[in-house]
Amino acid sequence: MNDIITIDPLSDDPAENLDRFIVEAMELGCVWGLEGPDGWALSASEAHNDVDVMPFWSQESFAQAHCQDDWKDYKPVAVELVEFLEDWLPGLHEDVLLVGINWNDALEGEELEPLDLLEEFEAEMGE
Image (cartoon, rainbow, N blue to C red; front, side, top):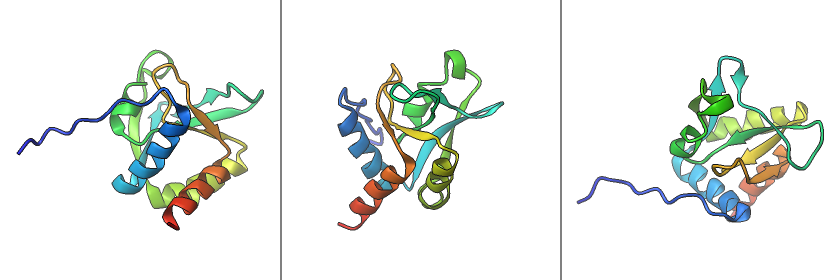
């Protein structure tokens, strides 16, 4: 039996990467963010002026790939899914931050209002 797990790269389709994020987060029980000397990684929103985005990934390796350039001193940190859904997303909403989901190497991907992402998870869990 082969113990090597192959992780397919992220798609060029942000909606597909969002679906993958939800499924993998539920399977693994966590999501991955980047934490560094000044706290959690943030990026300026591509779509909304004066709003920052906190990126999260469904796989540690996806997060690790971004530990370069401005984020070279950051490390992937797992956030338990229950904590992410119950504490993080409402807190990010209160802090007027967006969440970036499974961004690719060019930092492209979905930017969602945290409560919208929470609804996506609830819809998936309700099936």
